[in-house]
Image (cartoon, rainbow, N blue to C red; front, side):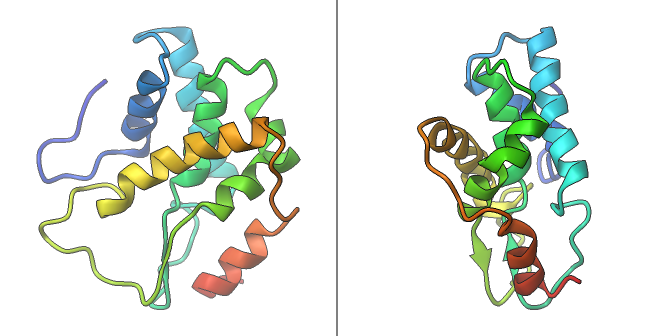
Length: 154
């Protein structure tokens, strides 16, 4: 795994790679590639870091959703991560996102990525997968309207 130089933000792919490796996925494996790809696909498919507008109102730990998809595959699930996200995993993961209001500028002494909450985003993604696998459900379809209300997106 390549890592960001000191003081630079890690990419989502780097963060997801770290999460998958922490979950026990073997380095340089097809399984690792699949776990990271699932997280990146979730980021592209849902209103997360790459698609949310910048809002002066609030900030969200947007990497929780991609981390949940990555952790789902990392756990050795035999189902498709996108299907799992659509079947309720996204709602559980969204409930674990941190909303920071008002949105504050990242301080110079904060670590890169999601700032001090990067660890939270990755851990919450893993926890969402564990909760969902245990039968915990979120409010169906609540993610998009909640995010829209928080950040003022249409």
